[in-house]
Image 1 (cartoon, rainbow, N blue to C red):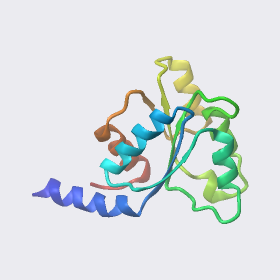
Image 2: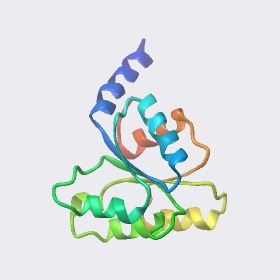
Image 3: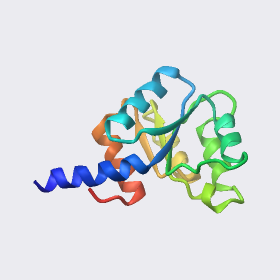
Image 4: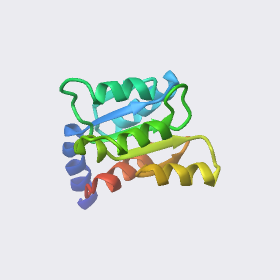
Length: 144
């Protein structure tokens, strides 16, 4: 009974969340979107590159996301550049958005650099709904 109540609690919180997904691969954005919808997060913005997401965040009246899920390797502004720019923003609300980096790399150096530039979490692809749910709950401090 307890776990059902906790899932319902998270479900109601999840429906109020807004997340951004940044990945240059359409298929990966689709997978992440489906996973987020599975865990109850339905307000999702998607961008194929860091520069477009940055333009949205710094544009007129953006909806500030509760979290960002970002690929590390993208053309133009990659995930590390994006986080670096985010963390240097003059806007505190933008600067504090937690970012989960997704990577297919198992290289500890890349994962360490992602953490150093301000990623809240680095997750190895492929990802699962339970793992992503746990990481989002952890970075946002949601109890469920």
